[in-house]
Length: 260
Image (cartoon, rainbow, N blue to C red; front, side, top):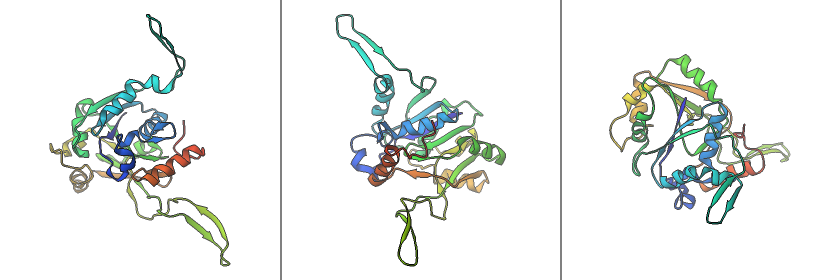
């Protein structure tokens, strides 16, 4: 299936980073969070990506245009007959990446509408945001979507707690400390959606409309919205502290999304 990833927002709540680059290019370890999301989908066999670009989209274009330069050891011959040798192969050689300009000011519904031409009529596709990581079972969510026969299935996740969780004994002894536990009881939309092609019929030709509002409301009223409940790890990257937390998990070898 094709994977549509929203990459065009300005990320104003993460201005420490997004003043200089688009949010999907904020690094987790040595690579941008967008790379981590794409690697995760590729692990489940989904390697045909459509990136909805907007704010500072040229930086994302440059990253993929120079992907070999970014990922390989390189030898250069600096004589008159210049030569470049890339020494390494990489697991992304069978990826296809479509870089689609969807406007600097567009909201999420319009960004999706503008890439309709890249998705064949009748084809189901995957749809997510370029700023959140999870260990959701992508193929199990697709299976649930097919079973439901609804137009759109969203991942229902528990947001991480804002504070560490303590297991405290009566005498005050602390038995355990869990940073950002998945303890919230309510479910939220975690992205990682599956959409039938009919979803495009719910998208107005209006750059100011967010997918999460009018289109979702219409799908709900028509009985065409389903959910796949995920009880595991899910973490957005909305603040600088969350960026630090995701980097901490990666650097300590504890990243739940690293399955490749």
